[in-house]
Length: 620
Image 1 (cartoon, rainbow, N blue to C red):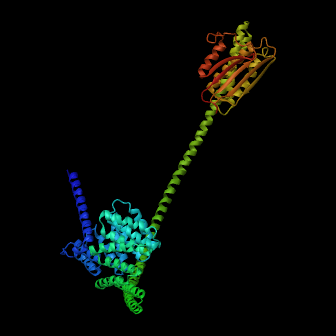
Image 2: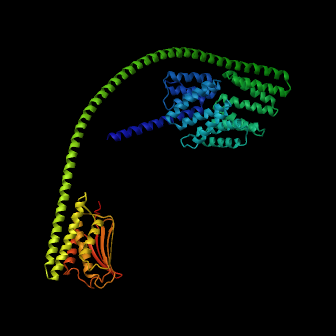
Image 3: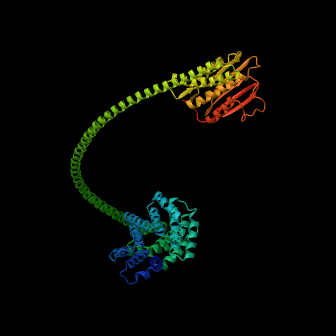
């Protein structure tokens, strides 16, 4: 409900604002169509009434009264914010036409600031047109180009009303006539403006365009200028624009003079002179006497021409003197204001200097106090840090002593452990050697070859385990077995056990640097012992030049050990699972316990037994 009420209030405010804007613009149009009627109305207390009364007198050419009514705008309170730019703009136009160019620029700038603050494209466009006209009158064409470019951009804006577009057309044409000193593109622009004004019922702009078009034809010495001058004269006369009417009559008099119609020219100039004197138009009055002098000269009346020129000279001299006096007075006022301002600035500078000195002294004191406090804080912090560092160093030394004592105890314990571990391996090795010796002695007392053979195989297995413990006993690293060293010790022992079978056998060991944990080393020792024993027992019976190759290779990850001979190999179709050979069954069991893979191949007259372990490497 509150939202709906707020929307209704905003819509009502927007509608009221639009109605006020439309009402204001309608009254502006009515004042342009009938300024005499506006001046005859009874004044009210609304500041807008004073504005429209001033506008009416401005259109009639009575600039003094126009200024008076502009002054009364302030007495009745300021105009509304959306219309205040019109006040500044009208004040600037009056100032420009009475010769106060500085005051005109000041008012135009104020109007532009208000229009930009209100974000009104139409008001901004209106101010730019007046600034362009001001630049044309003062021959400031470089600055005028800036305003012309801005106007060209805004001219396509749908919010620009027709009366502003019409005024821009004929003011742009007038600017181009003087800025580029060419009339080639002007006629088309002015004809377009006159047609546009007729469509939108803007007779005051149509009259201005007709006058400028007549001036263009007159400037080019083309026929028809009087037609457009007289068209403008009729419109101005009907509307009651006395200043514009006098201007077009002045141009008609010049055209009459060029056509040799001297008396008609003098009659027109007489009418213009009366209005100029009546309304106090000093510059037009002086110009009338100048043109009169030219007409008399063409008529062949040099005395009248000289007298008219003398009057023109006097009038123009007074105008220049008044302007100089105004400028001098303005300059003196500025100098006085500047002197006062300089005195104030000097006083202010002295006060600022004193204030700066006081502030500097205060800042120095504050800085000294801050530095003192900071130094005290820093010294206190350093003392606390020093005390804490001493305590920390004392604790650190105590802890270091404890750590060193603990390390010494651990080293002693580790040495004892290693000594005991080596002693254990040594005793196990001695026990295995003793057991091997007992088996050997027992085998010598046996008559059965099969029993001797069984004891010999058992003795070989015991020796293979004994070599493992011997290697561990001889090394400081008691948990790793170097495979190459073990194989180089194992194979000669086996050769000595099978001295008759190993005759003529070429054997070799090719092993990478592989180190194994003791559990895997024990199992692998038994496996290699069984495979080499198997080769000596069966491979070289019918082979003249036997070959035995034991190979150890690193894999990534894992390792591989193979035993290869050039014997006849295993029988075709040999069933490994139902094998009755104790050695091969032992190999199978040990391989499974290790988590390795066992394979057999027979290629190129060579039997190859391989054990592959693909787990993580046991390399130290």
